[in-house]
Every structure is written in C-alpha cells, then in structure tokens.
Length: 129
Image (cartoon, rainbow, N blue to C red; front, side):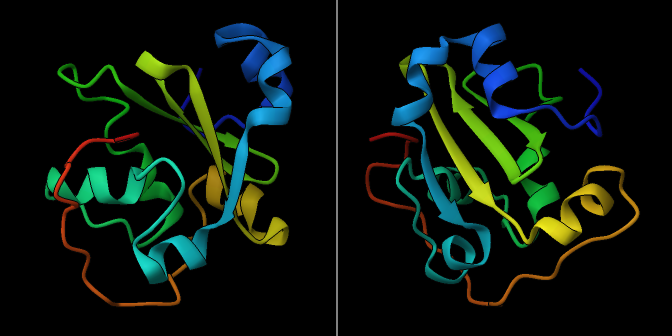
C-alpha cells in the first residue's frame, strides 16, 4: 500500500488481522497523545526511545520503511492514522481533524501539534508494555 493511500480501518483489519477486532480498537485524539506523551499502546513513548519525536501525524510513518522494524506499522484512514503492533495484533487509531486527513495523507499539508513538550522514554521502553 502506498504511504499516501487512505484505506478504511475495516479494510485494514480484514487484510492484516480480523474484522472481529474492530470493537477492541482503541482511539485517541492525536493532539492529546502528543501533548501528554501518552497513548493506550505507548506508541509515542516507543518512538521516543528510538529518538523519534512525534509532532505531526506523518511522524507515525517513520518506521514503515525501516527494514529493522517489523513491529509497528502506520496506515492513513479517514479518521487519521491507524497504527498496528504486529506481535500483539493490537490496533490504535490516532484521530486527526477529519477536514485535514486527505491533505495530510497526500502530503500537501502538515498539522502542527498542540504541544512542543519533549517526551522522555518510558522505563519499560517498548510498545504495549
């Protein structure tokens, strides 16, 4: 799938997991996750342990092309960005203002986060831990 292609969460679950997972997919506002440095699967904290500051939704795609990273995958969806944690088959949706999603996914616009706070790595250091 092209990194700028938008697909529904349902279609992604059908392809990579199971549609039965849909009710279990947690959601968080992207700006809130960036502001607090917290999200249910600790994705923001995991990126921080790798030296990646997540400030805009496109930052969640920085590991997609890394040949050494098979755990985390990000996908544009109409609501924002869906991130999967491969080993645990867990999914999280970072919700972004819907008016901006199409411009974000095609690379014509970026959304500055509501915060410039730095994030320190979690002691556990891993996603989902």
